Image 1: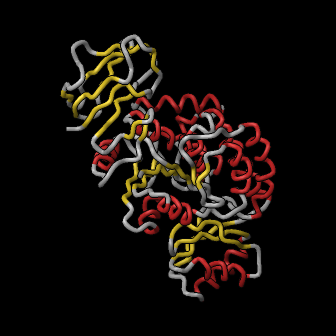
Image 2: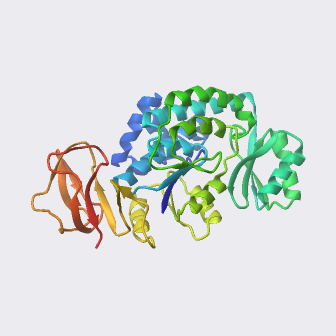
Image 3: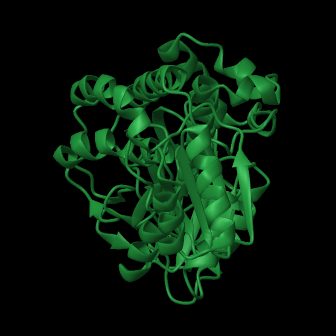
Length: 391
C-alpha cells in the first residue's frame, strides 16, 4: 500500500520552482496567483531565504509547490490509498484528495498563514527541536520549566519539537539536556506554532474553514490531531481548527498508516524531511521523496518495484505493480491512433492518440490492454486514457 505525504512550513527553499517552470503542471502557479492575489511565480523562482521565512510566504509557496508535484505524479496515473500532511501539509493532503477544491485550499492557506503571522506578532514565541530524548521525558522537561512551553511536534522517535515563550523554551531546553537530550536546536520561526499561543489564529480560522465546507473523500487523510484516518468532510471543521493549537502527532500518523497496511511512503513537495521521519519511525518502510521532474522516473521505478502491489485504484480495478495508466495531458476531444489496438507493444514516448492538436504520449513501456477513453470522448486533464501492462 502506498501513501502520499506532504511537507509543512520549513521545507521551502529559494528557487524551488525553477525545475518546474517549463513543466505542464506549472499552470497551477498562475491559478494560485489569481486566487491569492499574489505573484506566486516570483516567490517560487526569485524569493530569497529571508523572504520565504515569512510565514505568509512559506506556507503559500510550500502548498503550491507540493501541488505542482502532485499534479505531475497524477499525470503518471499513480494514486495513493491514504494521504497525510505535516501541519500545513494537511491542507495539501485535503486538497489532493478533493476534500478541498484548489481555490478553497489556496484561500484557506492564505487565511491560515495571515492568522498565524498575526498571532505570532501579538504573542511572541519560539520553537526548538529536542533530539535524542523520549517523548515522555520531553514533556517532563516542559513541565519542569514551569513556564509557557509545550510539545508542538512529535515528529519521529528521538525527534520532538517544543514551543512557547522564549523564556519557557530556554528553560525547557536546559531541563531536556539534563534529562539526556543529545542536542537542542533553536528553530528560526516567527511564533510558537501548535500551542495555546495560536488560539487567536484558531478563532479567526474557524469561519474560513466552515465556509470551505470540506467534502467526503474516497482517499482517507490521517489527521495530525488524533492520528486517525478520516474520509468524512464534516470531521475536518473541528480537526483543522484544533490543529493550530494542538501538537502535530506526526510519529503517530506514520504508525497509524503502517497499521492500516501502508508500506510505501511517497513525499511530494520541496525537501525530503518527511522521508527521513518515515525511515526513523516505521520499520521496513519503503520511502521516496519527489521534488523535481527528474524524480518522476524514479517514482515509476519505485512503484514498479513494489514487492506485492501498489495502492493505485481506478474505476474499481486494482492496478498492480505491472500495470500503468496513461492520463490526459489536457482537456478536449480524444482520438486514438488508428491501428493501435489491444496487445500493441508500446515504448516510452509512443503517441497513443491526440486531444485536439496535443499528442498523448505514454510515459512508460508495455503492452496496451485497452483504451479507457473512446474516440470522440471529451476528456479532462489527468483523466485516464489507456491501460498498459508493463513488459
